Length: 238
Image (cartoon, rainbow, N blue to C red; front, side, top):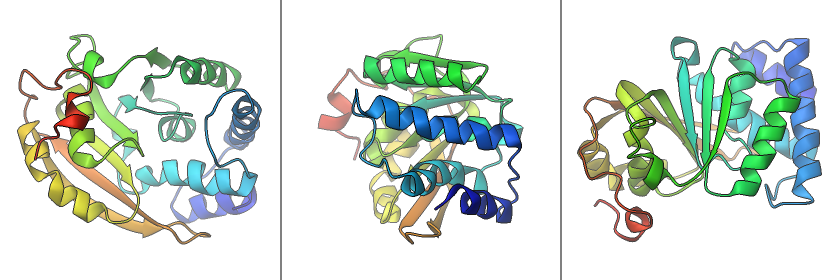
């Protein structure tokens, strides 16, 4: 997906890019490729693929969730900044916190945010299991996002403690998300959530299936969740 087609496809979804935003995506791509030679950020480096499989894919969450109505967002396990930073470029009012367990990635994200002149972006090195019990972060965010981190029954335990009651958990998944959703029903309910909807679409060029799962946070996550580091993945809620 060339940048021009990227812009056209977003336009069809009601998203219009400014000159500044076009430049920010261009710089994002350049910095991603530059840093990827030093640290492992992504296996996808061809420009057309980055625009479709990273940028467009990340922004697709906004096709089904209205980011104009929220202010605070935390992205768990963002890696190279996906999905939060492509979303932040479109919605600059968002106050974004990024949590990732690898310090090298955090260094990249801090540099990237500075170069793109993205305000109100905070990058934190750490694990979700640790920060999810910290009063400064627990129950604090309007929306929690995650993309390609873990199966949903594990991911819910990582992410839902961060959402405030009345907030949302927006999950970006690939194909067969409905199977993961069925598997995660108990975990979502246990952690205070209720699934609002599952939306499925296809990437414009590659035609790969993608899914967006929207989960509402109806009640506070019970004390004891998230469990200690490593436990959610070893003993998922089933």
